[in-house]
Image (cartoon, rainbow, N blue to C red; front, side, top):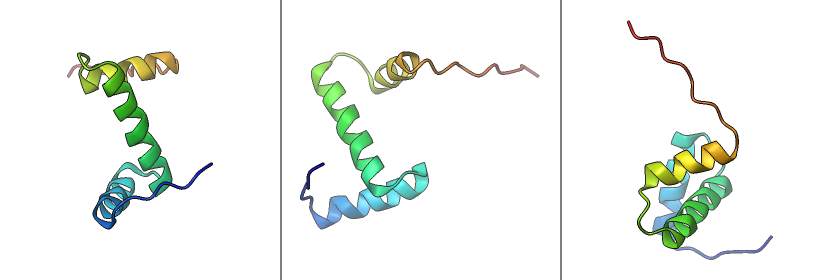
Length: 68
């Protein structure tokens, strides 16, 4: 583990985002870094596709939705 210095403004955005996403501040920062790294490595793939691939790689199943 290491220490990463970030600005106060970004830290505040991390704090607010982590509360909404039910993650710790560190987990939210790690999520943003991972997604950013994947986006830089795959610049033609949209965010939603990056997330879909990550969920598939983790063997997360799509929930079934009943149409009313």
